[in-house]
Amino acid sequence: MVNIDGCSFQRDGGGASWIGALGMRWALHLSGAPDYLSVRLVSDPVHHGPFQGTVFGAAGSHSSISVLG
Image (cartoon, rainbow, N blue to C red):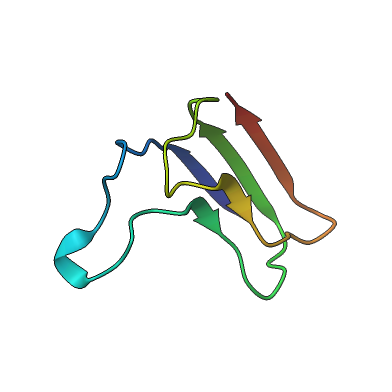
């Protein structure tokens, strides 16, 4: 079982410019449908670009993901 707690935000036009990226697009990126996750995220409902959303991908059927914001 893995527990993940976090918050995410994106400054308007901000992000990881030092590595040539366009900024943070997702607060949590899941690949391979990991299972037995407990995730709680807090975000701002007003998303500045290039932020697209809080969770990208899917978790397994024994997981719980909740997002406030």
